[in-house]
Length: 253
Image 1: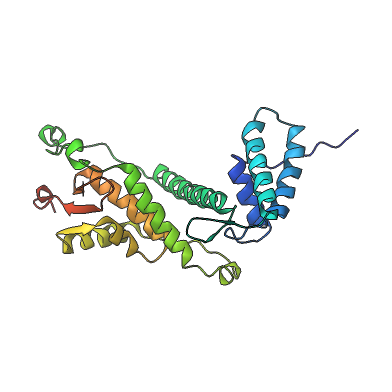
Image 2: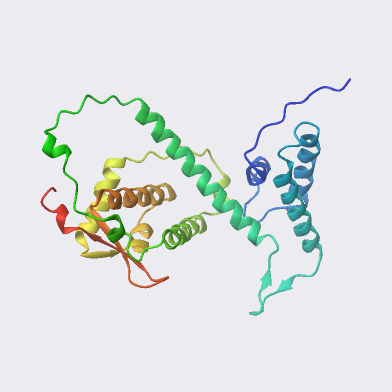
C-alpha cells in the first residue's frame, strides 16, 4: 500500500513556477527551462493522483513549458531588427507581474490585519458636518484618464526598479522587511505635489528609492484622488498623466 503524500498547495501554475525558481535559487531573468520543466512535470504527476479538478490551468502551463523547452533546442529566432529573441521572454514577464501583485497582496493583508486591531469611538459630529459632501465629481477627477494607462506606467517603474538589482549580489545575505512610515510617505508625496503646480505621475514614481516605496506612493495617489485632494489629468489617449492639487483643498489644509 502506497504512502499518501500531502503536496504543497499553490494558487496557480505561476505560483508553482515562482516557487520552483526560488527553491532552485536561479534568476527569474535566466530560467534553466529544462530543469524547471522536469520539476514542474514531476509535481504535476503527483498532483494528478490527488486532485483532477484543478488540473486544466497547470496542464496548459506544462504545454507552454514544453513548447519553450523545444524552441530552446532550435536555432535562435531573430526579430525584424536583427536581435535574437528569447523564447522565455513572455513567461518571464508573466512571472514578474504575478510576483509584483503577490507581494502587493501581502502588504494589503498586513495593513488589513493592522486595521483590525484599531478601535474607533462612536462618531460625535454635528449633523450638518456629517451631511456635507465635497463638491467634486468622480467623473471630473477621472476625465481622460484610464486605469490601464496608470497600470502600464506602474509596471514600467517596477521593471526599472528590478533592472537596478544586481542579479548576483541580490542572492547574497538575508532579505529583511522594509519598514515604511505611511504618514511620512503621504507627507512626502503631498509636499512634492505642493511644490509643482502640475506634476508628472511617472516622474513622481521614479523619484522613489525602492520598489515598496513606489507601491506605497501609487496607493497614496489613488487615495488622495479618492478623497478629492488631487485631480488626475490625461490630455490625450496614451499621453502622459499629470497630477494637480485641487484648489478646494486649500481652505481645509
